Length: 621
Ligand code: ACM
Ligand code: ZN
Image (cartoon, rainbow, N blue to C red; front, side, top):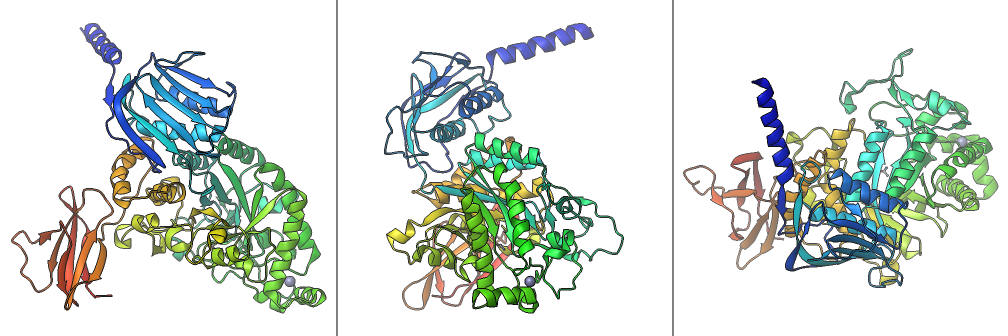
């Protein structure tokens, strides 16, 4: 009997596999929104009979391998074909450049005969493939389909900015090679192309350096306080073992850089100079200032003010930095190296005879200029090796060379100043781009840095600051989202903080035709897509987005908006009687109330109240 049951089950499975699952796609949800996309009459059906064809690039190129492997993972067994023009997915590198799409753009057409992609570069073909994948069912990463019917369409697409970055701090908490690869996969899916890897900071040195083994033996390890919240960590006690940490070996760095390159992502290592270096001074105390009798340790928990600073007057510090860079340079082929420069407290420099002697000998005005001198020395050294520097916007404070690129994080001022003097700049202002900040009401969120960037706020990021001429605006390379890891101690949490905000960053950096409501609707599909790909997403904020404008007399217009598609907002004006069900009025359109009125709201999703009631005092601007 058992045997017959087994045979019947096998038969049923075989039949199911034979018929297979069919999907009919009618609506496209591409993030980032393409420059131009139009759906047409007709369809194309992908099946196991569909052929995959490449033209203009060899079978061994990383893009061909990536595309072939990705399709294979989706269970399509598409055979490679030399010449066919029917029932084909065809990636073709242009012989003559199509000037409309530039270096990273592409044209993708779905026609009844197949999917036809062209681009000027492999990167363009790669991005076209990401768009193509997003045309497939939302659960394509998990579900097997034997036939997928796509709507005919034409997409012509290219990015608004060349710098579409994602930053990751691996010092405050350490993440495995697998975690970093997962981050890079996410970037690739959303056409981000610069991975800013924050490898050193007070809480741990995370890259192998052979010449100074102390950096890894001591600087990469700290006393483990991960069992208590970040803000409650007690300082280490004498003799406590240092068991939390780690570092990437050179082989691992090479593996990650190559994995990124296969996804058309450049990796920018960040080595902090001259501050945020407690872990260096714990490893090599002689690199600190004279008269500083602090015993440094690899930090645990909040470290503020960050007093640790490399001595600016000691030649052996410069030699140390050059030695370290000698080992870093060969690992990272991209032209940029990030040298930090942020939040360097210079109290020690004020007291240090060597630093003061350097200031006098070079005729520098103050300690800010000493930092600039130090950074410029490093910049000159890197230039000899064909490298350029990026620094946080503090590098402007004591003067900066014309070749330095400024990363503007304390608002947009750094980028504005940089662009006005002709320096290149990258935008990542905290208010829009710090994804370690809460994304919703902290009462309902895992602990995060105590500030807020909602999805709506992240989506309203414009990398071109106000007040620049068109020529100055040309100095803005683009922007990036930053993920500091003080409160992020595992990959799930990292993803929770990145998503869905990284999708907003992607659209802010790539698209020229952003539309909040369309983006919000697309996120329904992308949440599902990401979840089936194995990513964890945050739920976003349910506090209504309030817009008030002045109406006639003493009245105000009130408009409410929300972050999660399908949310229902009920409101009532305080003082009015509330409807029987206690929820108030379902918001469907803007309404008017007298200036000074308090409006209370509750948000519901799928019949469930989300977060808590909110009260807004409506005041005309
Ligand atoms: C920074 O957030 N300290 C660059
Ligand atoms: Zn000093």
